[in-house]
Length: 339
Ligand code: KG4
Ligand code: ZN
Image (cartoon, rainbow, N blue to C red; front, side, top):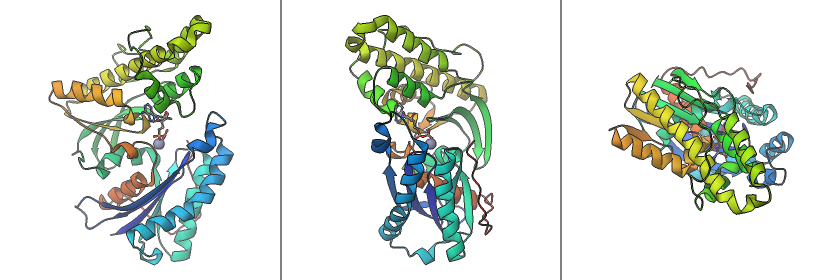
């Protein structure tokens, strides 16, 4: 059993490092320390993530963060048993930094390394919290790059129930926010602006809401927001809060209704929400209310673990190790899987 597992996340614009301890095959792995550096301020001037800058910043941050984590936990580098890293999906250059550092550490310390799927990290992130779910459950994975509903029976046992056919939910937030002149990343900014707006002010489409499938589509919503913004023209500034609130309401309604449909179709009674959009307060409030009314349970990661972080990568590695599904390797000729 690999007991002390270091996890490194560098798929996009956050550098995250964390240390998890596995006691035995059964007990929930324990988060000993974590450190995170967000590049948001650096990319803000460009209105989005600049891949080249992201890679360079990961290089600058990853070793100091690793040192901070080991120091916090009082663990020596030589005590590590396994180094896990995000293998994809994500930005190729950014992923290569985490993979390169993990494999260099592995080679120098004669340790095995393990590539982790970024989305499995998000999916298992609620296990880091005070209220971990039990299997099986339906997972709603809503990030900047993905929107999926999954049936999760155990670690490694995932069945895709539905996904977006175009934009992800986070992308819908981000692109709409840009149209409203909000800074990157648009999701949190749009949510904040929406607090002062009326959700029923503008009629916006709920694409695929009644499709009968568990698939999503958000591209049309973005176009509708653009059309509405153009129609308002010079009056737009007076209506941005209302338009933000209406946009958020449209996205959230689709996510809530499809999640409930997935629970009903699968016969499962537990929902797990993960990924950056899982931090959205309206989404949480509406899911809480809808699930409470139906006697269903809903679990979220802690707020700060909704967006990218190293803890979820270390946790996913630990849970894979416990389940006997991990194939750690001493082959340090690493590759990454951007898509
Ligand atoms: O999971 P994540 O950190 O990165 C990906 O793997 O994509 O998710 C980032 C996404 C962005 O689109 C961001 O705008 C969105 O999550 N997001 C939010 C909120 N916080 C982050 N969207 C809506 N409301 C929020 N509070
Ligand atoms: Zn992510």
